[in-house]
Amino acid sequence: MKLLFGKMILYTVLILVCLELITRAFHLYQQYPPYIMNDLDLEVNAPNQKGYYVTGNRRMNFVEYNINESGFNSYREFIPTKNDVEIALIGDSFIEGFHQNYYNSTGKKIETLLKDKVKVFEYGYSGYDLADQLHLISAYKEQFELIDHVIIYLKFYTDLERDTYKPNHYRVNLQNSLSFRIKDKSKLVAYAAGIGIFDPVKDLKDKLLGRSHLELEYIDDHASEEDTSRYLENFKTLMDTYNIDKNKTAFLLDSKKTSQLFLQLCDKMGYKYIDFGPALDKSNKPTTLIYDQHWNNNGRKILAKVISDFIKENADNL
Image 1 (cartoon, rainbow, N blue to C red):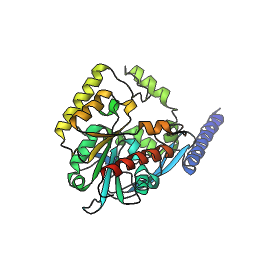
Image 2: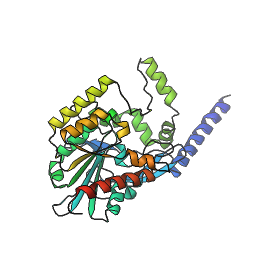
Image 3: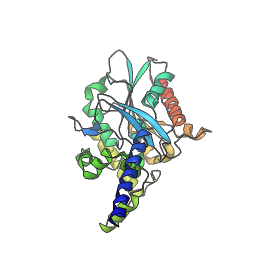
Image 4: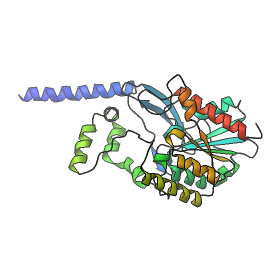
């Protein structure tokens, strides 16, 4: 019996080692770059690192990322000048672009469409809301004074939950937790977590602790009248707090997933916005990834075209 038990343990260990090696060899695991809170109290990726981002349980989407000195996924460094025409593209994971090779990003497509007469700086980071984005502009004030066009990607029903910026040290410190370190060391555990094997355990833990489990369905195209009113007030407060240049700033949004009251407020307050929704709807091909809501290459091509057309209409030097 002891011999049988010993063999079972040995075979189990060998199988796990083999699965770990296979997972590493075929890069089946998601690899998030480490992130930090920088000197400007802004959460960014740890600068100067490269890696690969995986989506899906069979590596449906496998792309390369490149984190620059500023801590953002980009094919270039952010060095604006008075002579060049620069565009800042600010947003969350949709702008961050871990679902597209960094050298084929939305920003790169914009530069190509504008015949390399512009440089696009992509300030994208997963989880950014409007408070984060406006704090970023304020933190990098000297850079943005030189940048000619600022485009802020905004999802009305998810990006206006707060009216004040506060750095999320808790999220950054989670990297020091035991579970995070285990996933960082064992790619098999990271892969298993990525495909949801541990979700039942997490659900049971939430129930035992009395927590409500929120399914990530990304329902962001409607809200109650009370919430809508709160989002509008939060927007007003943020705009009063951060004095952005209306002449060179525009919000990038899908009007079908945005309150009409917000669009009316922008018109009243003199804020420009770029509506990319109609262009996506006209496409005969899918615009998002099969196993992910983020834009695929076709979706990013359409976004780049919409933004490029807007820039040409609003730039005197192109």
